[in-house]
Length: 202
Image (cartoon, rainbow, N blue to C red):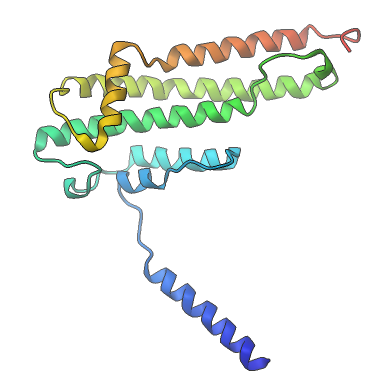
């Protein structure tokens, strides 16, 4: 039994050592971006983790063009790639923030929620704060989109989806500001309804 215990601990130590040997530092924007992933269950802490990865991707330097997420044949493609990357990551952050805010959003102030009106108002405050925090990322996304569209004659097949986002922003088809304002207006309507509740509501 003692030998078995020693063997098990030795194996765990060996496996840990092997795993560590494959570790590497996350330094570049593309590496941080690859850490972003969709979870089956979108818990706030997992959404926050994704936002952290994406924010780090915006701050980090780009990897050598050899390791880009698209084929980069020349400096002009490299320039467009970087603009599209920044635009796309800002859009992903907005998506994650809106998803997070939806966890606290109340679509309707039902009469039977009256006993918990205070908790519902606190939840709406959190939703509003999150929705408003997404607005600066939309401004950033528009800035990079404007730069990228000037080079729209350059095509990179691997990031076709980013190019589509670019065209949707410039055509007005993709407008997160309008969507965020809708969320904020709903928050205000529901907040007003909760504040108007009294002892006779329930």
